[in-house]
Length: 166
Image 1 (spheres, one colour):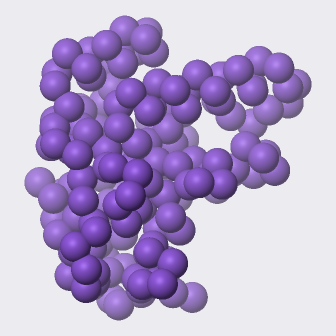
Image 2 (image 1 turned 90 degrees about the vertical axis):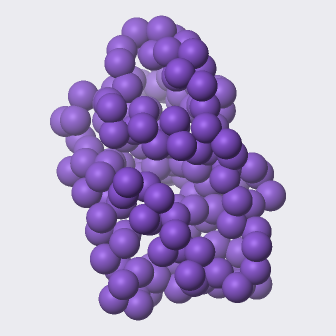
């Protein structure tokens, strides 16, 4: 599975044992999220959550620039918060189709468009900026694996996160 290949390639870069992931989310938890959203989660993302339900807060974030992989329950919480911001602020760039899958402590979010229209988007609610990272989640993971293989991802041990080399 591509997700496991990605995580294993990250583990090669890390010298300590703090890259941990939660055990699988049950299908009931995923279905509850789908009911909450009123939409199905694409199978590729569902398969990832059936392997790992996000990661613990004290773990090294698995996505670049300190984006922690969100557990299903946190996905609902962050989605709700972003929905509230979008409702209260005219012109907010966030779209209800964007499912948050990772977040930084500072609030930056990596979202996956469940309709497939926008692909994978990095969104910063505070300054209302967005950046399209890839056209699909599997494409995003493939591109990160490729960057790791090309030695273009480095682990900042003191800061405990991965960054992309320029």
